[in-house]
Image (cartoon, rainbow, N blue to C red; front, side, top):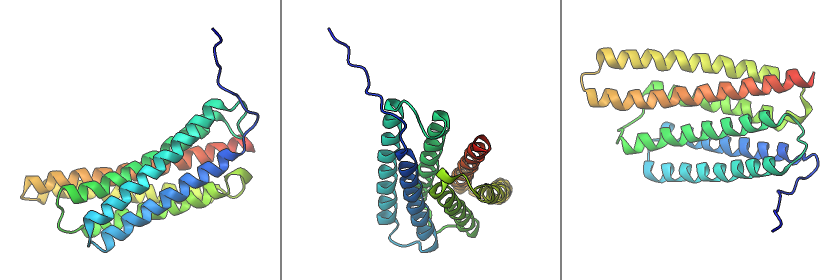
Length: 208
């Protein structure tokens, strides 16, 4: 019996293209969530569209992971590619989770703070897409990372403030639980954006 080993290819530069595709798809998802909370109509259809974007993101990530298993030499550290792809997937998963909860929890309309947090996440994803689009050149990427970190700090402050306010002031515990979950998801999305910035910063340092 002959064992078939995975075919290993030489250094594969297409990882940059696949990561770019993932980041662009993430930006589409973030924009769709922004449109949802700013124009809270046809919610079911908009949430369904975001789910499709998330599924497309899964397809791209699976392609990256499959190629990673079969490639002998990668253009940047294998671990960095793995973490970067996973974190991009995590941000999009969080975005889909936020949209689904707004619909499934039958939220009548987003709060101003929810809209503000979604805009912060969108701004962070814009920075991520710009950084990854030029990742292979390793130049001028740190300003993107600094801005993503700043946005995450702002999101953390808002979400923690709103969760505390809910627990202190919201008379309906059911409403408080729903919004606590949504604000938590928003904070998680921002955290994963920051994780991406940390990986990019590490890649820049290694390439120096």
